[in-house]
Image 1 (cartoon, rainbow, N blue to C red):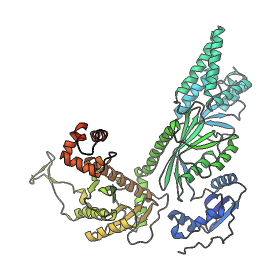
Image 2 (tube, rainbow, N blue to C red):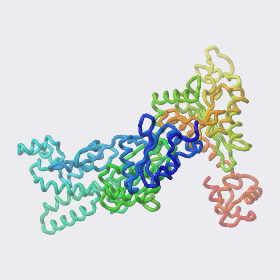
Image 3 (cartoon, one colour):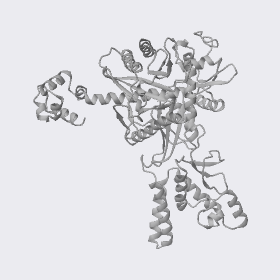
Length: 634
């Protein structure tokens, strides 16, 4: 492969102005759309020597056959043009958005003569104002039922409204007190429009104003001895308080904001979008994002905000994000054009905002885990994953049993390894194994040792137990009806060994297979930073497509092996008194040695009181108390 792309523009040909660029393939399809404050500087990154590029970026530029750009006058214009082109061309190498599900919204049809409120999943009703999304349909219905007690606006269908207005007879929902539109024959169109405006203002976050006004009116009516009116205001106030009671105050009462919690890895991201109005969470929306080209967290936030507000009608005055985009100032101007007022993009760093960001991020992390594991519960997806893996690795058969190995240590100490097993694409936790490594030089040596120990079990003669069918107990000799127990699974050979790491770890694993005489077992490694799949003896990695089921399976194996190794390593640390003591501030290696020599045993040290620990040379009262507290909690 040539190290320079044939369609690379000539030096000085690319302008230094802000603009938007498009990569196209030989058929003219747009592969990627991006924006830049300086087109020459940005595009030069794509035309660097291919060996220096991120693997997925390299795949994009080598798939493309041309690049074109459009110069714009301002950075805000480039934001707008990038958004429009991504919407129009849906480029395969840009991030891809997918709603976790179709969420229900509350919509008010402001474009109608007599607006109605309804529950819908359709976001394209002309002139409608949307609130939500809501996690459940019943939550929207419950909110509407409470709201129309305070703001009795129309709820009936368009057909019922038209029939009622033509005949002069109230619509059926109006007859039973469920519709307060002009079709109920209780209010005029103008009076109803005023109630609709109040309804929308309340839902947009004006709850304090309505509470104060209704309280004032109720007290005034009561003072004037107009108890019937006071009762109506009381009922409306109760309805409003019931709505407000459904959501806790998470930010100051005058706060209108959108908060985005994001969790990501190299291939995907999950977004939790909290809609906060009047200090309360009024809606939550979840998105999953599939990434193709390597992008930073700041660039991801940029893309998320463009997606969220490109067609939005409701832009809040403050947007809280985990990382500030590089072009935050331009984004604020772009959003200001949509809102008509100032918009601030900020990082939630402290106080209530930081607490809420942690909650949103935790939800995003859980959503990302669900997104990545959902495929493993789908039989078709698992079958496709094994087939894709067989083809990508050039195997003669699908790897029905895969074993993945990971090394974990703490600064070179407490070195352990894990082995996790997947059969038919599903984890077999009863067959997981962990290994302690007493002496090693580095991770590759650790990997070699562990694999030699594991592969040795394949050459041992199969052990057989005799089981009495009447008692299901192991017996010493054949009783006639006894049956041979199942084959030990640890001696069952895998079709594929997967190691967590790149080329060095894979070569160590291949050497272990050769030395053990089991070269019939395939081996590969997955490097976490770039999600590359390495095969022994190859100079370049295998790059699996972003949407590949095989890549998701390898990721799941790698992550599970890492989790299991960390769990075992932490358990070992708890049992290692030296490591435990090393966690106490102010306690170094020399003092630890003196402590252990003074008490003679770990048991004696653990049972010692602070006064006894203080007797050791170099241990003061504060340090003694810290040691005692730390040991008593472990």
